[in-house]
Image 1 (tube, helix red, strand yellow):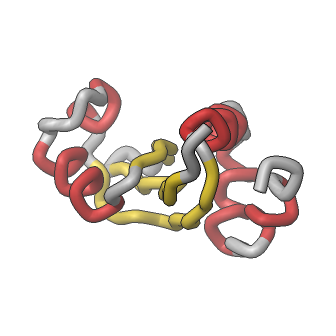
Image 2 (cartoon, one colour):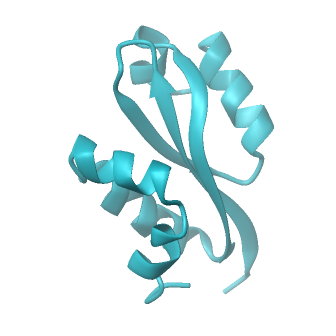
Length: 97
């Protein structure tokens, strides 16, 4: 299994919602979301206005995918808490990091 650097990110969208994803190149991926070229129907409909929060992790792709999935199912209040208190990310996901 190869280890890489991944970014887990939460975008704040124009409709006030949050979108979560992962990537190896945060700047490129954010630009794709803004331009609507990303393979993401959600951000084509609700453009991101900013990267609300991001975290860099080291691991394999499956870890990044597991974390992304866990954040995606969180309610908005919990996502906002992660955004406001980014250190909690490492507390919550320490089992995989």
